[in-house]
Image 1 (tube, rainbow, N blue to C red):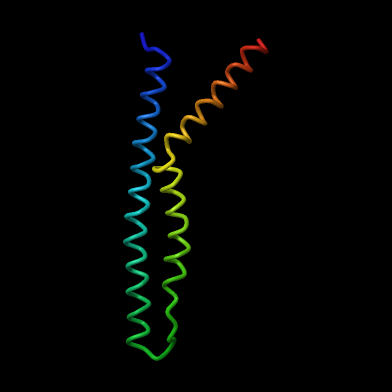
Image 2 (image 1 turned 180 degrees about the horizontal axis):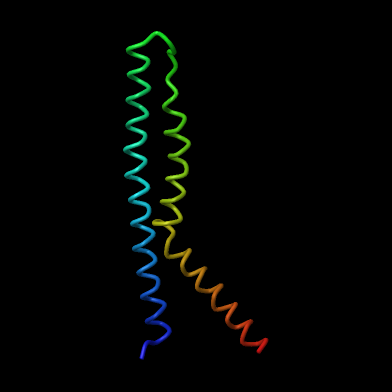
Length: 100
């Protein structure tokens, strides 16, 4: 028989693993896309006289902010977030049991 604590521990470990994997995918896509955008912008500026403006820092910083928050909530503070979610679930269950 599975105990509540064993279930919570297994669910926590699985969730943390999924969140970390999601962050790694996000970081890899960020690296590839930002590299492409940077190269495209630098090449256009270097090879043409049409538009001499370096715009690549804007998506780099904007997306980087999103990636940073994904890291904080999905990796760095994952344990805290999961504990808060589990506590909320327990409160809802307690409330629902009282209304039966």
